[in-house]
Amino acid sequence: MNKSIYIEVPESLSKRQSVYLWLLRNVTHNHLNGNRVADILMENRAVWHSFWFGCETQYNAFGALLRDLDFPEGYAGDCLMIAVKSSNMQLAEDMLSGFRATEIDWEDERHGLGDGMRILRVFWG
Image 1 (tube, rainbow, N blue to C red):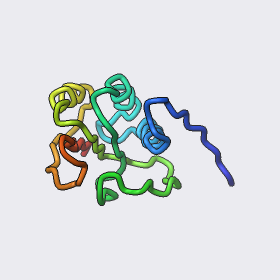
Image 2: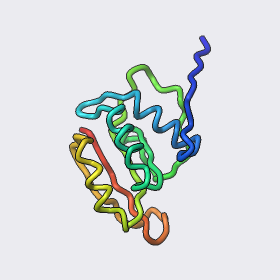
Image 3: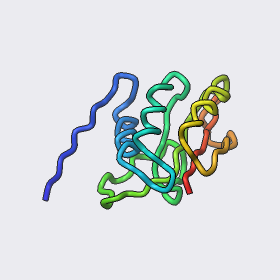
Image 4: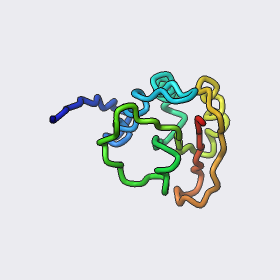
């Protein structure tokens, strides 16, 4: 059976980011309400540069190639990685109040994003 989905691409996002946003909107897992988190991200679009969403066990490197989209029904994503300019770190932390996350950490700078960029890791366990 061939299923088609339509993913709207907001002007402020790349196609890949729009796919991650769509995945996020369609996940409810533990305390993660994906639709609410996606709304908060879009309301605060000026705060972050890009994000990656998936399962913690799938994470190999930020910015990895888009995973196969043939996810099983009820796909349980639990990890969000947000690339943020260092100057926006406090604004990013303020944005997280509605996320209801289990863990929030700033990753170290070894991911090669360049000067002035940090990764904020958000996890729902």
